[in-house]
Length: 366
Image (cartoon, rainbow, N blue to C red; front, side, top):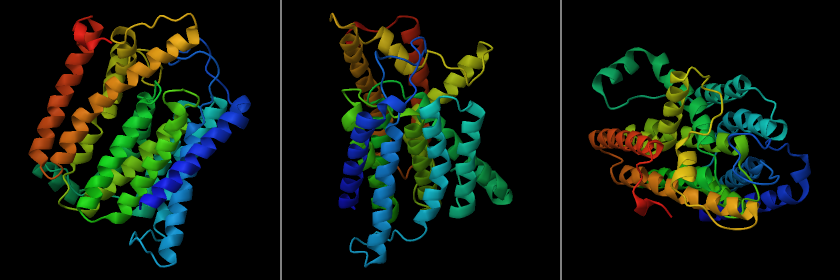
């Protein structure tokens, strides 16, 4: 399993270096006035293509190893083709947007919905339970309801990762932490095949991060966010479906930061009368950049912005670990996980309002 992650790491790192070296001139870059722009100069946004190459190489190699004897007992059989088929519509759509920046939001949503539909059709994904008796009864009597949740999760999580993709190392490290946490629980229940897919994703993400943090030489783009979102969603749903001992609230707590950020962003924009698809600069990570991270004094504007950019992500890494650590500790215990989801939501809202109202303790600024 580890050797597959090493392959994924090196393939992604080499592909990322090649993109920076030879494809930078073919990328379309953000205009200077875009609200998501927190860098100076032109940086390619095709890091997701490198992650995809690392994932494809390691998964296919794992299938070949299984076919020729399976020395690692990974059992990566032909069913992995279904994962690849479900991943590609969202991934290729993200790459198209990163290259052209002309793919409308509705078409990107259609492509992620297509990934969800393929997951239901090819992988038989379903949500059998949520840990609440009344809802579980509905899922048993209305089978389409579980399929609808699967479709929503696979289509929505890629966009959630895209929303938190704003600073060097932010979404990539969150994806890496989440993938490893899921892989840990997979190993706890003896699902080595699912753990292998997640470890490969983590390896490919680490290969991308070599170039993304702290140098900011390559961005993940929509393609990176979509790959992380689809694979993590498929793995989370598969883990709950295959193993009754895993609480369905384990992946909810694990992913509650990007999910809460997305839902709060939709609410905030609708409350102002704006479209939920309209970009703004009021996300949690953007407020941390502006109001918590201290300014850096340097004559070079690009270096000054890069240093502040790099100081932002660690705040959100720590914020993510606040949910990942208890999720891994209590992955069987539904009541505890539900309570912790409520606690995190409260902390998120209070923290957001505190930053907006400039009520940040001095010790939090650095």
